[in-house]
Amino acid sequence: MHERIYLSPPHLGQREEQLVLEAFRTNWIAPLGPHVDAFEQELCAYTGAPHAVALSSGTAALHLALAALDIGAGDEVWVSTLTFAASVFPLHYVGATPVFVDADLGSWNMDPVLFVEALHDAARRNALPRAVVLVHLYGQCADVEPIAYACKTLGVLLIEDAAEALGATYDGRAAGTFGDVGFYSFNGNKIITTSGGGMLVTPHAQVAQRVRALATQAREPVPHYEHRQLGYNYRLSNVLAGIGRGQLEQLDARVAARRAVSERYQTRLGALPGIAFMPEARYGRDGMRSTRWLTTLTIDAARFGANCETVRVALEAQQIEARPVWKPMHQQPIFAGCRVFGGGVADALFAEGLCLPSGSSLTEAQQERVISVVQSCVQTRSAAA
Ligand SMILES: Cc1ncc(COP(=O)(O)O)c(C=O)c1O
Image (cartoon, rainbow, N blue to C red):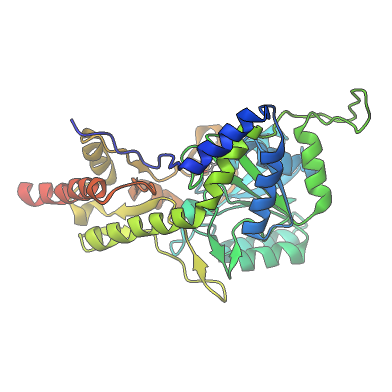
């Protein structure tokens, strides 16, 4: 039996081990500590973000972003519909109401034209949302400039969910640094990982300060334990931050490796009938660089001869993990009844989309196994015809 090929496994080096050992040797095992401070500073240096707060997950980062921006009950927040549910769950934690916005085919991210029109229409009706959660999907930046401009002009807060897009740039600037708050995830499947963790970035010193306080049980700065607001226990441990620092040193190499994986898939599978890869969008004055965190494609079953689920099952039978594209949020039972602008594009991408194994440690031989299974699916149909 073949060894299993995972969708996006952790890729660790020796430096991470050294840094974790350092935490052990210096007894900095508690949450916070020198690795956390250094990880925040190093991430600021990498992304250009003025302030960063290391947290226990990307989900916690979004939760605290909403809390620190005073978004809560009665507030509407517009969110990309083609995403993972963690882009939306925290809205419910604070009692806000999500409204979903469709993707466009050119980027699979929030459709900027649809969004800007809907926002201006809402302004005319005096029904603007408080905030927007703009997701940068599968390592690719959304068309952030027109969206950020409309938000700024109309006084709507912009939160960037860059959980999947650390290392991606738009106009030469890091994903996550355009809005009032951005955040990254270091979950085990992300381009760099701390096993579990997240980082909130913001240009606003006050927001960073508030998030820091909320994340440490909202203790007032007095010697005894004094609390004036609800707090959370959301900070990252010093041990995990050590892993993160080692990983961050390798981020550019990881991006290059994932892009190389993606290029091989496109070269080897791109000519098959009915296959189309997630396009790399060409927007921004200085362009956009996707990390290709996950290489994702659509399969037109009529032309290919098998649908994406058949291909996924064929891969699984060979111990290869592939995943359907995110099921849109407006289709999720938990969010039934929420409003949505459009939705048809995200529906189509979910119906036909598949994510292939894309890890930065994927070897060429492993990738050949994936490629040959996909190729064999199209041949199945020719044989049957
Ligand atoms: C788009 C998106 N948003 C949010 C999250 C949540 O991040 P975390 O798992 O670190 O809580 C993830 C990943 O898990 C994600 O893919």
